[in-house]
Image (cartoon, rainbow, N blue to C red):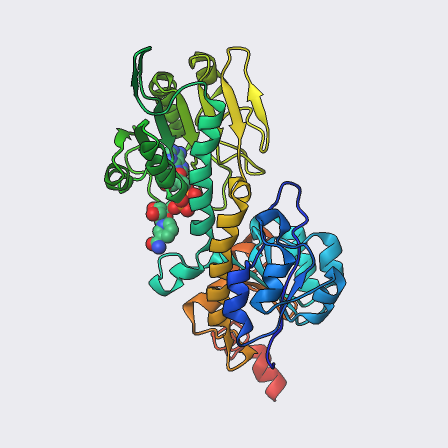
Length: 403
Ligand code: NAD
């Protein structure tokens, strides 16, 4: 088979159970290209090596995958050891979180590896929706947040009318009604909870109500930023939000927070003071917990903390990896769709006139090409070759040189 060979490795990050390609994804790719899978790569997601072999992949050692592939599909940004093993011209494609991995991106650029980040897929472009791994993984995280909350809670979610009395349904509030938030609202509703959503984007009211939840109006009425995202709040607005949430949140049994602003730290919305006012047994699941802070004061990604007042705070920044089978199946579809766009006529091609291609490349041929990442690294913007620049304009020194 000719054309780029696709490789998939076992993820090495602690707690990561997903794999970049499931056997179904291999079936889709293997008709046209060679796929190399590291032995055991899919085990923690529920996909044995035999399923990959049956789907048409070659299951082999990690070093053989790295040496033999042209395009490496990953879930998370490669670590230093993997970057050291890569060679110039190879392509790495995944949820690279480039702004949180500036050193690794610089190292990939120095090795002349091409890095493609799912975070940079233009999400509002309808033909890119099948490539939108942020949405697929937020869907998994939003669903899982409700399951985690239900498991930690000591209460029934639905109303229960029995001979032993009637249990009131659990009340769930979701702060941040983006992709994960709306899935969490829908899931909690299906479990029988009474659900409420809160967001600063005016458009979110209709989205929250469409899943059968009530909407809590924020005092920050115009919080929309660019591209459907929220903007960063000012310090005053954030204080205002913390104050209003301190009153509003005390009535709920479960609080799920998902509020994020692209490229910025997550807003701290549930302060220690608010936590102190919640009823014992209240469960907070913080999907924003991670290196960019969190929405709940003191939440630690991957940890469950019980406050002195008996409030349970669960830091859950990577919940999609807690649903590894479904999350990997959806992610595999995203990988196949993005590869389908980037591989034409059996060659890996980046067409600068294609909106998706122009957006997703972080670095290539030794240069960091993403304007956002360049900004974060304080690198000057790239001047397009055909753009007029000061050196194109005739000036006195040019004339002197011509003379
Ligand atoms: P996200 O993960 O960046 O943020 C999650 C939510 O937190 C957002 O709804 C945001 O408004 C909210 N938030 C941020 N700061 C807040 C604050 N201080 N207080 C309260 N809430 C706050 O967002 P996301 O889930 O990736 O999606 C963001 C938007 O993009 C949504 O409007 C979504 O519908 C849209 N989207 C569109 C497409 C598409 O057009 N195909 C695909 C995916 C997402």
